[in-house]
Amino acid sequence: MAPRPEDERFMAAAIRLSRWHLGLTSTNPSVGCLVVKDGTVIGRAVTALGGRPHAEPQALAEAGEAARGATAYVTLEPCSHYGKTPPCAEALIAYGVARVVISVTDPDQRVSGRGIAMLQDAGIEVDAGILEEDGRRSLAGYLMRQTRNRPYVTLKLAVSADGMIGKTGEGQVRITGDIARAQVQVLRAESDAILVGIGTAIADDPELTCRLPGLEGRTPLRIVIDDQLQLPLDSKLVKTAQRYGLMVVAGDPPPFDQNTDKAFIGRRAALDAAGAEVLQSNSSEPGELLEALGTRGISSLLVEGGARTAQRFLAADLIDRILLFQGPGTIGEGGIESPVTKTNIPPSFRHIRASRFGDDRCDEFERGF
Ligand code: AOF
Ligand code: ZN
Image (cartoon, rainbow, N blue to C red; front, side):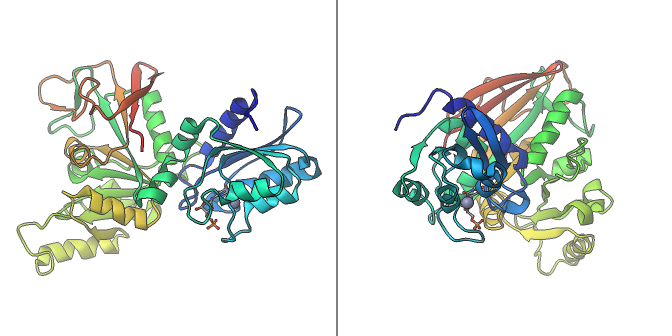
């Protein structure tokens, strides 16, 4: 059957709803579901924290008896498998829903079209592919991990008007204002993990937490690429390792043997004792690290700096989205040049949005996958 005029409006609302739990449901996707009858929303839900229950049974339970004959809007094809919960397609059938509108079909091999077939076999009308581009964006982490076993990677850069991301020897430089910075904290909250290089970790001593009121509990796993384990034990990252989690990636073979060098072994033991996890992975091959993260269930990664780390990911073609925050001030002498500016974004990226946050501007670029 054909989509109806109201479909996009309700699907847009379901997609917005699904974003509430981004970063909180891995390895499951955060899915939104609305149950609508006679133009009124009678049930709504998002995949629960930790990934279960799924969205549909919760939305159906809210709608109750009234779900009979209603339309369900779901951002992802309802599941058809007996996993840790019974199939959502079965719940939709049992509640007597007349029509199901889907944005994105599920690449999970246990589902992959079977959810739709199950609904259709029960006589339910199904329309798929509604607002698919937005739906895919909201599910980007899940889709990337399912299809390529790696997280979806967002590079965030704050750039001054003269194209700099910082100043040599100066630690944190204010480039953007409070509203843009709050927006970055929302990005952190939506991510499963956040990554910086050791240069940034030492120069800025960042905490990389989410401190926005109401979102304090949503700090992602913090990761530092630190080939030789130079992260100071009194850094904010190490001091908060127990509380928020910290992964330190010891990488490229340094000019000593990591298995016998006493100082290195000592630093590794100290980080371990402080609650950090030390992972061995070749940092000049970021793909290796991404695969390890994907295997651990990390679906979305925010790369926050600095220039060298960004460059490595870009060179390996492992950035999927770029958020370029641009402040009005200049840095001038001693500035550290941004690895990307609006004029040299790799041609595979498409500009999809420009927003304003106070005096700052944010341009968003993405690459399809
Ligand atoms: C839905 N609605 O809200 C979500 C779905 O481990 P399980 O049993 O929870 O199954 C995980 C799979 O369920 C996941 O790979 C994806 O196919 C689907 N997630 N499905 O119908 C939801 N989160
Ligand atoms: Zn399900």
